[in-house]
Amino acid sequence: MTSALFLIILGFVVLLKGADWLVEGSSTIARRLGISQLVIGLTVVAFGTSAPELFVNIFAGIKGEADIAIGNILGSNIVNILLILGIAATIYPLALKRSTIWKEIPLSGLAAIVLALLVNDNRTNGSFIGLTRVDGLVLIAFFFFFLYYTYHINKNDVSQKSAVHINPHSWPYALLLTAIGLISLLIGGKLIVDNAVAIALILKASQAVIGLTIVAIGTSLPELATSAVAAYKKNPDIAVGNIVGSNIFNIFWILGISAVINPLAFSQKLFPDIGVIIFTTLLLFLCMFIGKRHVLERWQGITFVLLYIIYIFSLLVR
Image (cartoon, rainbow, N blue to C red; front, side, top):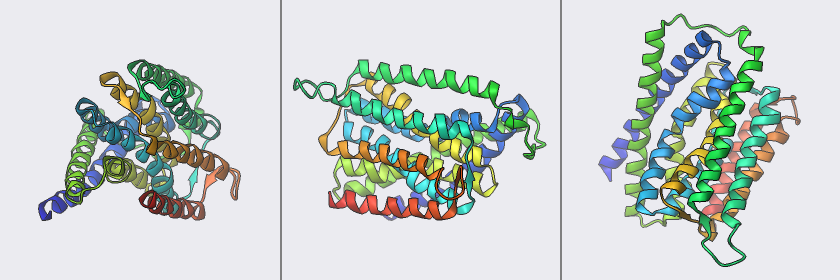
């Protein structure tokens, strides 16, 4: 138990430093390539910070541990919106772009709705309830549509010429920072998840609870570190784009890949959590029109964090 706790703390240190390197390197690459900060947050950073979820789900899918795989993704998406965006907004109010409000946030909500439809499509005839390989291919198809969309918003996003500081790093140094950051996030995330799961097994917790809480929080730590650092550096595009992009990645790409590897049976105890994702996404959208328009303010961030604490308590009671 003691060694596991030490490795979790070590994982935190590696994650935080890795997030700093990733934000620094990817921001430089985005500016030098003429790619907007929003797009780099939605793709490169989101993919890098979703790496722990991807590897956990691949291993869980191969072993047939569907509750871990699906619970990890559902829990991670809830953590991303309520806890991570809440903390980031508390550090620094997050001004969202119109495209994020009207397109990316609704797209992340659509991902949850599509997931709900796919896992329910066989309930009436009593067949396999969950994600089949065909369902996985459908999710992956949506993911490629998302990549196509990001290509077009990059062409139309002229805000990249705003007064954002351009880092003076050279190309090789920027690439090295990004690579080391991604690797550090993966190592740190794995250290935390592996040892958190080991502790949970000692405490004899169910796989669904492990997936929704410990594994979800552990695999979301890269998003937390990256968005918190980005908010501290007053870079809301990466802070928000990382979260929204990660939520889209998690459902369309990671669950899609997991289902293709091995069909995932969906436990009925997890259905309410899809509803929580849809609710929190809608709440984020509505917050853009409450208080200061198009800004997630500090008081709203604190409210999100409190809602996450309530969710955890309700989950334990449930």
